[in-house]
Image: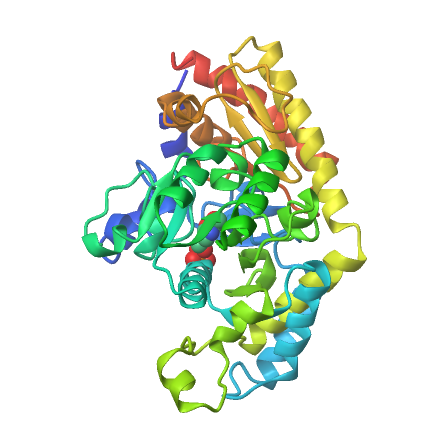
Length: 444
Ligand SMILES: Cc1ncc(COP(=O)(O)O)c(C=O)c1O
């Protein structure tokens, strides 16, 4: 019998050939680090709803979901219609537009903590601006970041990630204070120890949208109290959880109001886009006051050619208005719950150490046993990370791809409102066959 790797190579000759060509153009032949794959990544041609197709004609149930951006699935007709009409009306009018106003109102309607906002082209820009605004507002330089939490790839965001950091000046690291994730007393100590703390930024359901979760309700409540008492700006990075953890993100799901929120992905309806929003007096650090002293020396500068561009604006507004008025989240969450139960059942049946955990439409598989309640996993972060880096998990991902299922990263299923029981059943069959193949390869 062929191994998973042999099967992968045999099923994807078109992708192998495209990768050879792409390797002469891009480092590793890819345009995003997470698409790096051995022996080659897959090349997709198109997507529709919960499905997508590769250059060899293979069909996939898709859980990458546009790196989390596609809560409404691929090419949703309402978004395709809005974007195609807007293309004909202009993609950049070099001016303010009604579309950006509509987009902002749709965000505010879902996230009550947002009094004012500004748009960007990505989540990386949003977290960079959040840190700059907090620093300007408080007059302090340092930002607390939680170990392993991901906020994009700018210099400050890279502190405390699991990567080394060539190219990042030492001085920028010096302004970041990295503390263990989920440990309230570590945050308290950092704030008490250093009078120069401007803000804390975190993924509010734990690193990597809940892959490494913490005791979410209590931790967020504790952080809110601690930051309010000490004049530290609380930044929720809701780039993934925004409009997915609930229609109003993690902050509405857990009833905690941050000072600033960063958004991207779903906020732009599947097109490029990001936003920073929150308390008006912080966001208004960007505003002119017609006072040369303020405007030239205190005001936070915010250009950006594609900020609030009309294509992203109509896609984002259309998606968010649907999320506000239709059971989009309920559908995605219900299918994710069915998927999670099914994954746990398969692992149980095959007597493979492992479990699936997660909330809303974000499900993570860990190939190790845990007695958590399958929502907020209690296993140590070190153990989850170690397991996720194992060859068995690489084989699981490839094996699923061989059977027409594509997952996010190495362990995650991001479910959309277009996934139905049919896709979930197909996924669970593929999962059962895949895990049997991983065992046959001698990896578990
Ligand atoms: C929580 C979080 N913040 C920020 C970012 C960066 O967003 P972008 O890739 O749009 O720059 C990401 C990207 O995956 C993310 O997951």
